[in-house]
Image (cartoon, rainbow, N blue to C red; front, side, top):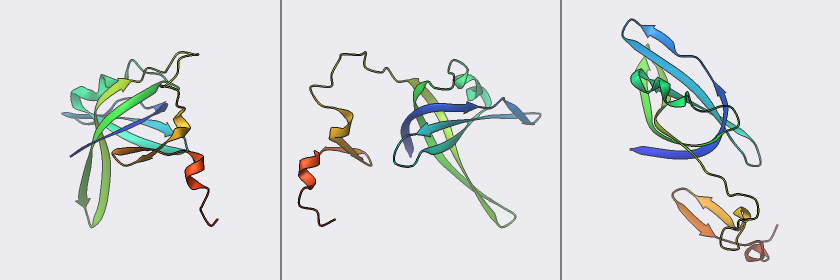
Length: 124
């Protein structure tokens, strides 16, 4: 199963040769929100160069798979990136059909249009 997330490049690490026949490279993206999240991804083998054309601050879309394994009764999880795309930001003055990003609340794979006035009846 594959997943996708959009964020800003925060840090790019150099490629590491783990063995004579295996190499890996990690990078971190920053997700904005109430609390900033830093998510680390791993590129392996011939995909290590996918991050070369990006710099910290670039807005990207990362396609990845979840990978998990057990070693000596410990469990490890990796986010294995397999495609990276640059996100084109809207030029200044261009609108999203009259809606701002705050008009949307992301819910998993669904996006629901909700406005602040939809929450007037909340008890808190």
